[in-house]
Length: 406
Image (tube, rainbow, N blue to C red; front, side, top):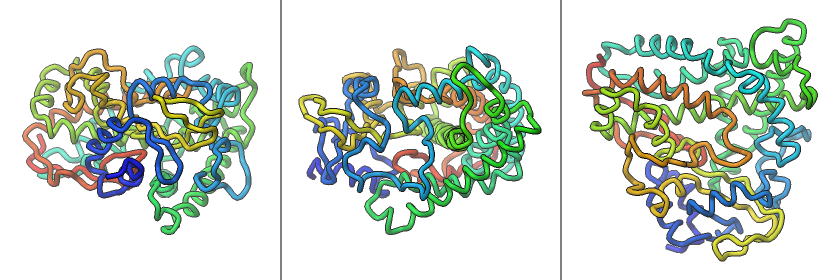
């Protein structure tokens, strides 16, 4: 088939369970211009260079074709730092990092270790001795959503409402041709505005009644870069809430699915739990939660692997294709939990590398170590399982397993 249809085929839900043959086709064809004017890049070296190239913008306002822009809010508001370039990106990220990690808050993530382990044990207790359960609904989703809610200070009883908004927002990343016709665009805008209004109101309550959560810290901290404006705070809190659990749900779900498909790896890790940190890195390479970055564009004409990508053209970096580039990784289509030299794109790279990577790694290591003893001897109810619609944040919607859980 024509290379110009690769984006259409990659985003087609029919290929969600196994997009990797299409990624191989992309690598073979090099940088490919698509029918809609976008450019796909799927080779490791080129992706790495572009992620570190200051001429490549993450701000959708720098894209030349308005038709390719995501839904616009009814009232223009400051964007979260994930969609900005330096120096605005750097300023907002530095402010947000102060209550999250080193050097100002070096112990915040590590202090969650015991709490994460307790939550995992409680979740496992809920399906022990059952003959079937759903890894996603019973384990992979409740853990990170509980952790990010507590980290930010969101009341647990409000999380179901936030889940509905999150689902509508993630649906806007569908990228398929019928997305607008299905009404995803309007629903995403409405959900985003509702979530930001909720988080803004919660932040205002923290002004007069602070707690030990991150939202309180962001409201009251006055570092060298100043405080976030109320609009910036709402956008940042929305980003942290969504990114703080969506990718981790996929990482844990993909991990359980992969272990059940590779029983030798499951057995190895169960007998040698000290290997789990390396296994999580391999999962991030082999089945990355974020498959592609759709919102990039050059600030000037640039050459990528001999192809000129014009200023403002939509540039889509297919991270999952780069993660399986045979020029970079030996036996790239095989899951090898002890793989060495594993510099993957599971959390991106460059100035926009994943802000929450330390938390996601910690949650995944503890969660999968806790879950492993209860997976051995079980089998998948359905393989491949049903997947979520998004080709960007790719993960199974359910991972049903059967057999007596120990």
